[in-house]
Length: 244
Image 1 (cartoon, one colour):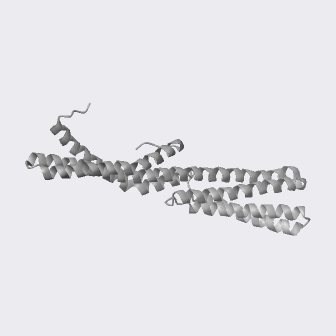
Image 2 (spheres, rainbow, N blue to C red):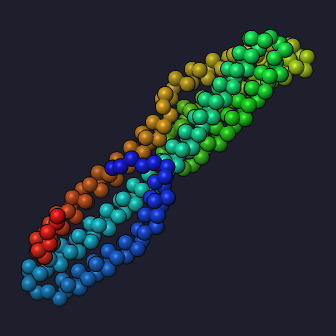
Image 3 (cartoon, rainbow, N blue to C red):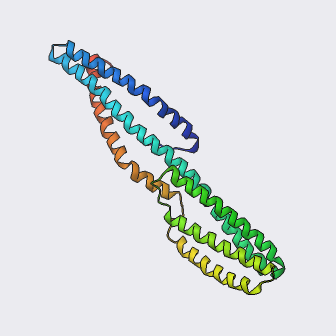
């Protein structure tokens, strides 16, 4: 039920490494309980052995379910970190593109070289953002990133057009520069429309995917945990063990 953070990933991975040993220990307990059932003749002792076997079996189920949950925890957090990096790069790249427009608006054509550098920087960041976005879906395939991917593709295309326009101007090809700039304006407007399709907080994409992927597992875990608790009550009462 607890919220996990980046620093929790090594601890969670270490827990997963211990699952096999814990399962083996529970298998041993089940084996002992089965031996006890074969040894005891009294119904009361038979029932005791059965409850001991059930207690171990329920814990095996809990381990299996919790291992699945931890796997999703690690995947979702890893994906979230990559998605956060992708979004940061997209925001920074968009700022570079705005700076490219602003520097020409303020200083005229003598600043086209500076505008080109801004657009090149934006294009480089969009490429890194695409790598990060791919890493996010590789880590957690349940995350739906199509809207963000479409937006990134449009922004990348608009940056390429802006860069081509600047370079054409610097090369003395005013006609191509004008044509590419018109294409840039159209493509950037398309990107703005696409931006309306994803949440203002992209990390919500991971949260939604995680909740959907783990909902049934978490419900099943609570049921099995309750069953284990009921068996434990019987065993504690029989053995005279009190819980403080």
